[in-house]
View (cartoon, rainbow, N blue to C red):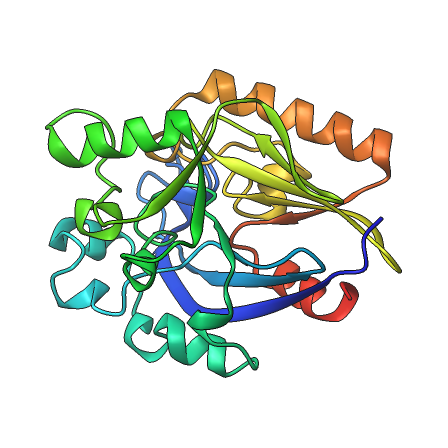
Length: 267
């Protein structure tokens, strides 16, 4: 266990069709062939992990100009981060008592547009950006070809960054802080296992599970949200088994209730 604190950094909300978040959430039937579309908001947040060895930023959120052309228009139309401009990373950090200059390391869970949009603040610095090898390769491939995944924008991550590339499935980064490779949503998604004094074990699952329905109900995200459904299920079972064995509390990547639990329960 480590004497560390975890602080939520609010970055606004993304609005989308809930069918993206929970597969088959609203489907047609014989009696209701055209069900209403249900739109939902998902929390976008970062975390500052104040650890004895480093002040660590978990993800960097959306670029503040997401709705002004930084994101492709079709992507923004499907996933509207309508208040991204109200929560630029420096301001969001300042609201909880930190500055970009306080950050010693960044854990980049993956490089999608709502997670990597603040990396430009670390351009030309020595701050290590921890990312999985599979993620970095897939992001560059996707952003620079017509294949791959549309949710990567090269302008988010194609900077002079001090990439610290993770190759293994499990990596102890600092005392009481372990990185977990959880492929499924993307090839190189990273979760974080934290063993915290005064709390116990917390697992930051990130976008392996957007909401509690994905974790508790084992309902996958909609097809476009999964690089590999098979890998997603395997990662989910690994995550659940690890949580059982370590008596861990799992926190989801975009669940507003989980964000409040992070604020209230973690030191």
